[in-house]
Length: 342
Ligand SMILES: [Zn+2]
Ligand SMILES: [Zn+2]
Image (cartoon, rainbow, N blue to C red; front, side, top):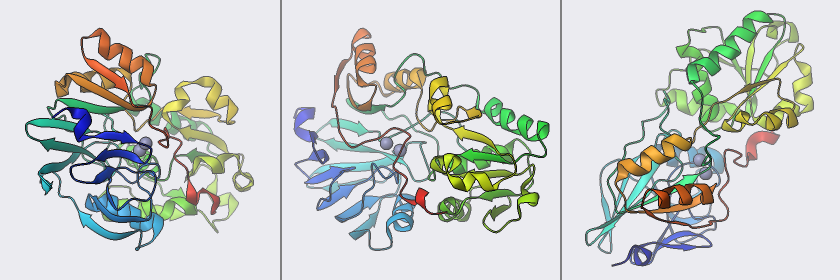
């Protein structure tokens, strides 16, 4: 069997004809396996969904309880067989519940990694490298310029600014699934123990994380808190809110944005970000390379992001590599359906 017979890139997503399933389909399909809850990977309306318990929980919060005809829980490390193809979910270190999916038959093993990172994240299980024949990877930050900085230092930038400007509010833009909760956990790890305030669009997912054991400390909804009580406070919100009229109700706000894209100064300026925090939930350039080598795969398929640079690097170290040019997957800028709510 050739790898291209086991998994085929189609407009809806990666398709396994033997098992008749799609992985992370961007259109509604009969049977979907889903790596994680970001809206470019997890969509509503499939006939059946197989995913980890937390991914199913997150989909339920985002799309309502009837997000699919049927939902089945995948246990990490435990295989499920469909028509002689074995599917196994392993942690991907990207967001709570995120998984890589191993697809195996007749001695051939392909890993679909979904989105992943190798940097510390107190809110989810770390990525577990798996040996495989073909490794399918994203390349969101697949350029040498992307080397993510020390996380603790990024958090210190924020905390130093809070100390320096005790009369100003700090608004931290962070994606509602994963990034916001990770930033909160990192702020706590740095020893900050005052209440943290949440924009309404972050509440449900953040509460879900807390219920699932993330140590997020005291969190309060920001709605209804008098302006003067928010001097010196840290408020987390969706990235779109930092430029919104919503942001004007805070005392002289310092606008911050936690994103891997904050590496690029022009992006920060474009978005009117005063304090960029380089915090990414994707592997940086060195970690993409390290991960590919650790899987010992002889073949690499690149789904989305900076495909060309990563394919070129793979070929330079003697691996077969090809871009899949898959459409419909975003970068960190996942569409934020809840961002409109205040
Ligand atoms: Zn993602
Ligand atoms: Zn993605």
